[in-house]
Image (cartoon, rainbow, N blue to C red; front, top):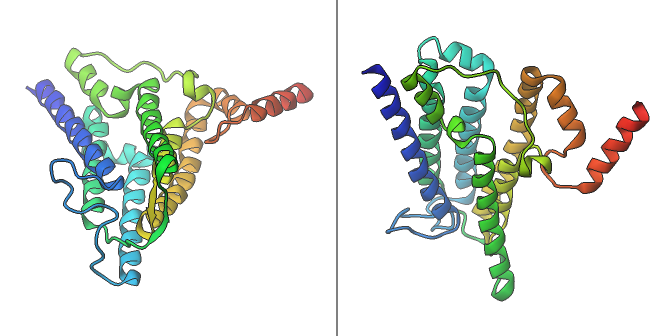
Length: 257
């Protein structure tokens, strides 16, 4: 029974994640799916700009703290004293999805337009936005999508297998940037034909959060993977693909050798 519960719990958390992700994308691109969400990021203002900015930044801060604190190894060691390790990741996904849904529904719009593109420029930005989401999704599969969202951990519990030693491998987009998932998010957030003050606030705040969070994530990766990840850092840029970076870092290694 325990194994079936673990599998059902993880599957439910994953399905909630998919639903909230669809909601969030619709909310960000100002499109309603089946009438939902009732309001988007570019909705009607209901409070003063000062209050809206304060509320929105507090929600983003809470979202960032939940994401980053719960992802740290020290928190995981403490957390798994009460939450079984096989559902730890699914619980993280469940809580993150819930917090993201709260952020979207509690968001206070600031609808003043910063820029408005039309014609071919608008189509180009929509295509770039779609490309960003595609990069994020495809990159998650490159790094093991089902491990990332807790399903593989649950399946290992069901079949009675254990996780092998962590292995580092460079695949596809990970050969060009170290964090293609976050690169995809940044492209999707910034590429919009209609940028309002509220959307810009969200995008800037999330960009700052990503840059801060990646510092802690990379510190953990170096501790876990050691020299292999340090070598990877030296060869591959963090977020922006740059062939010159690879050549420059390769030449530095040759000079040091």
